[in-house]
Image (tube, rainbow, N blue to C red; front, side):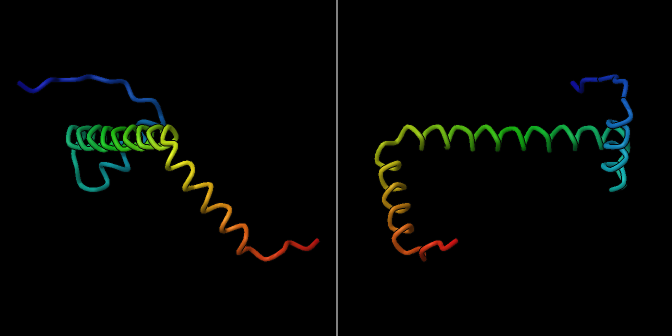
Length: 81
């Protein structure tokens, strides 16, 4: 069963709704689209945070990154001031 939701929009939310509605969507379609897009961004952000945490806990990966940094430092030209 579809859930009905009633909201009061502030000016920023009203402007955001106008942006989404500019694609030819009605209010309901625009809100559903915006919610799906926001949820997808949050899932992606959570996945990136989890990956970063996993990598920061990976001693082998940290050692490899240190090795690459050292190699890049060896290849970099001397900085002259």
